[in-house]
Image 1 (cartoon, rainbow, N blue to C red):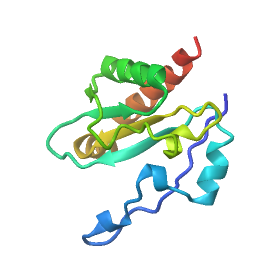
Image 2: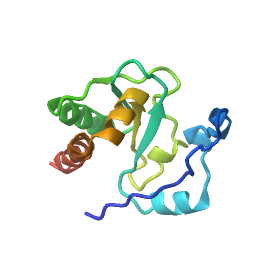
Image 3: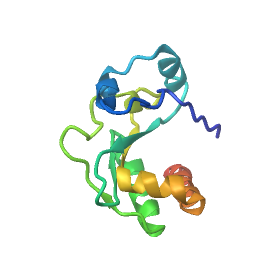
Length: 141
């Protein structure tokens, strides 16, 4: 299995007003990204959720079996998961996560508090990444 990690968007570096840079996933049309995802069996996108008070990951997308396995693996490593809020479900067929070969992908919405902890704790970041990798491997069974 080949793994691709492609940085698709520049970081918002303005002092404020970075939300103006937001592009909804079903409208994302960066050509290099679209060329990459059509070659992938399954696409997993990682998004930032604004919550700064609670630690959680929301899973959405059309690949419900993989969503459930990612939740199971993340929870086994101590991460909290929850269902996505309306508008963050990742179920639009035009969502970039659903544009791989299988037409079913996963959208992870990671709260700000989790992102901050991953940035500051390399062991936790490795645990998060490994939980997602385990889920991908388990999905093939």
